[in-house]
Length: 306
Image (cartoon, rainbow, N blue to C red; front, side, top):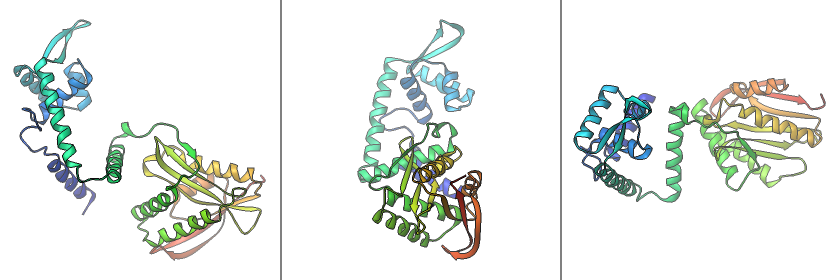
């Protein structure tokens, strides 16, 4: 199936699940368009129809007809804006508030029933998936806060292995063997962790894991390794990859390393641009077949004594 087919399939599934095709919303005499206007007025208070139209991106003529029906049903009332004589303000009547209360209770009961068979862990996954859908489809809800770098917590390492394997499969069609490599590298890092020579950072953005990077020792006491840099799609484009690399470089210098090396594949162009901008130099590259693909591996080195 194409992406469009997948989106349409999900839309059909979800509209059926929340019963949007029913004549009226649960416990309400109103169909969806009228119910949405009542909801907006109830939540945001007195406002103009134009305010609602801009917020919902709704056709003016369609909105005007809906407001007229709500007025005829005595659910909303209008009054002239005292500050702008040519504007009318909408508010709910007592009957409108009563309808909204029944509608709200019915919707909550409907969703509670829908989630009855979903346990707490899966509810968290569901909410996270919905949040990602909103962020991917609407720039206005994408995160704008500054990222926070912290040390790993229990559960982070397994999550990072999972997410890297999942993302490399989605973006480059790498197979499941990459997960084995990442798990092996991080398993050894945790088992043999040396706080005097190594470090790790997990990036959070709006309370969500947004990426990570690891500083690891090597067989050469003067050389450290930068490993397993990754940034979640929702956090890309804000310089987070460079922030993580900066943290790794600064810590390597602080620990007294003379050089920092890394191994990557030439297909990972975004990461490679960061390394080049930070002064890493390509030492060698070699073709190899890994993760079900023909790839070109590269070793890059940064002289920390410059």
